[in-house]
Length: 330
Image 1 (cartoon, rainbow, N blue to C red):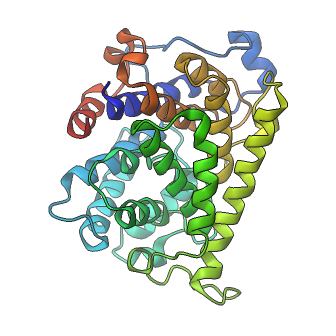
Image 2 (image 1 turned 180 degrees about the vertical axis):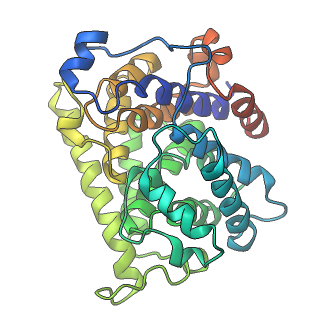
Image 3 (image 1 turned 45 degrees about the vertical axis):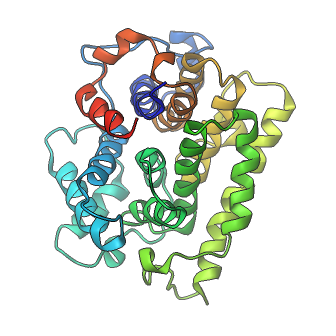
């Protein structure tokens, strides 16, 4: 089945299909591609955005860590991988300003808790977390802590942390065989279970803000905002009407919980038709590449590499790096 490879390639495929439609009006997207959105990769290679580039940075950092995955072993490698991305000549895909500002601050060696953009919950927190959901053998504490830490290096808002953890666990559970129709309930349950759990060994003093009285209060805000976003997905699916711009239903995706929610929505409409999932995600008026890449990661984790058109594997940019990660984790 090769679920890890399916998820990683699905992420890149969605990213590539959503790249030309980002910032476009929904009516203009439909006029060019039809209501189903783009369904064919364009270009040789088909280019991706910073979403895939940074997911590769996270994945390759995981491969590089020697010994147990801990804050002490992961943070320095992750920091270096992010800075290599920031300085790369291939970092020319309109990357988010939050990531660029945080990387500029990380570059001078200051503690990451001082470099992060503390109030940002942009989707850059969770667009790159998929590899942490796919790597095998982690404990629950390791997976949760690593998912939140990779977000926190650039996006310090608690909702970015919670959305990243939920994204990682969606990929993990789908890879391990969870039925798509049970996914929302499982994610909603995790919001309740984790609501006041602050991973202090991974996050340090990140929670300390002028108006926050405890780490539990800090992280609960993130879980509550994600739970509300999941409730909107449930209501949207229950309506039975799924045409039109998905961003009008579950959010434009520029912020972390909306990127997760809209990706889940477009995926769960037709979880057995992965190309339709990507097209629907790309045919959106908001952050189309991030929405489609997350939806593709979910579809690929559930259905495996063979669910995607075979010819796309040799067309997508960074195929060699995607194959290396997938092979390590399949």
